[in-house]
Image 1 (cartoon, rainbow, N blue to C red):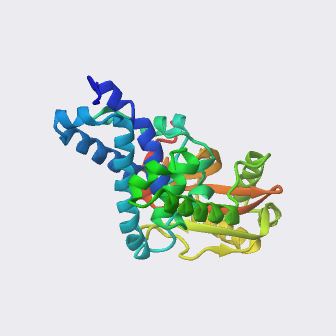
Image 2 (cartoon, one colour):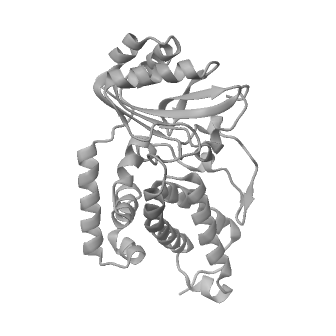
Image 3 (cartoon, rainbow, N blue to C red):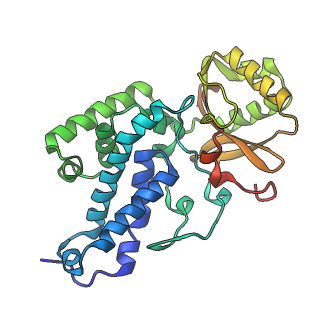
Amino acid sequence: MGTVGIGADEIAGEQRQLINVAYRLLGSVTEAEDAVQDAYARWYALPRSRQEEILSPGAWLTTVTSRICLDLLGSARARRERYVGAWLPEPLPDRAEWRHTGGTGPVGPSDPADQIVLDESVSVAFLVVLESMTPAERVAFVLHDVFRYPFAEIADVLGRTPAACKQLAASARRRVSVAQPRAAAPGQADVVRHVKEAWESKDIAALVSLLNPAAVMTADGGGTVGAVLRPVEGGARIAQYMVAIADKAPGLELLERSVNGMPGLVAQRAGVVMTVAAFDVSDGRVTRIWAVRNPEKLRPWARSSRDL
């Protein structure tokens, strides 16, 4: 039996789910959009008779999108080995802070920020853990543990048996368990606010008191802007580094903003966003800071100071 009268609205309605899957698999809004558009292009390239044979267009699109992402993840590993400094996921602003470009694709007007659900599975901490997985582990884990797809369907994506996919997801789950990425801790917004205030006043002692002694800061400049190439370890060293940045960048303005659904900071200068920082907080102190400075990854944040 085939699907009778597949409508354009039905196909377009799958875009939100596909963008959500692709972003979690790739950690990049741009790459996620490209993967989804590629999947749609393949759908529209099918003869009408073949489309009508597909019982679930949504499942077909998810499978194709996931396969495209799997291929991209394989090539991304080689690209990231050549990447200058640390590679961090592309940060997402809150919907209200996204730049609305009014772009269109083959499925009509789209705005990724309006489609990506900001929950724990897109926190920077969680996405960083996903980066430590093999491509197959990441696909199995995201599709099963985040989106609840059965292993029988995941097997079709990975070209493996359901049992093998189950083992991949279990291996990925252990990585998550060891890394322990957390949802926003109670009071995280207050801690981030205090970090902002201490940073603005260049108060090293206050910053040290807000940072866990074993805290780690990772910066991503992509080789196009200045950023430390290796993580800065230790609360005292991080505090000194933050104050040194403030000394070198007069006129830098810090704003409290949602970063991937969690309290974070945005640094802008003359209305241009220079850095987006995400935080991990535990027991009232910052344990991790991820600072994205690569302009290519900050395009969604490119708004005027008035808008921000």
